[in-house]
Image 1 (cartoon, one colour):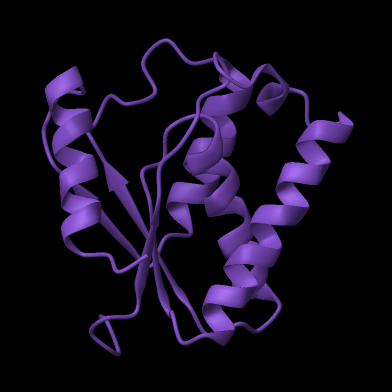
Image 2 (tube, helix red, strand yellow):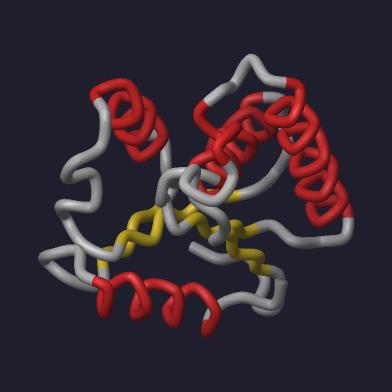
Amino acid sequence: MRKNMGRTCCFTGYRPAKLTYLHRKESGEYRRLYEVLTSLIREAAVGGYDHFISGMAQGIDLMAAKILLELKAQGTDITFEAALPGMNQTHGWSADVCREYYALLDQADARHCVAGETTRYSCLKRNDYMIARSDL
């Protein structure tokens, strides 16, 4: 799957509970963060990073996944891996967020699930998985 060792970047970050504008895609704050993250991902790709892993949680993780797929659609030569803490990660999420999650997940080049059920421990294990494989 990976073309070059040492060229992987992972994303895990704030959730909407900490950055409330992450659920308000029309807000200026959301758009600004989206632009900055897009620029950083482009910069990483130009710098040789070609494999990106998202933890697929609400917030920054899903934002990064969306950006990665947009860049791939524009011809950027990258792969996108979805790292999941459990098969029921979306339990309790709104229908809109679930639709977005599954649309992104369906387009992932690879998926890795660390546990059957999502728990605090499996979320930490998912993060350990991503960090162990990433250089950025």
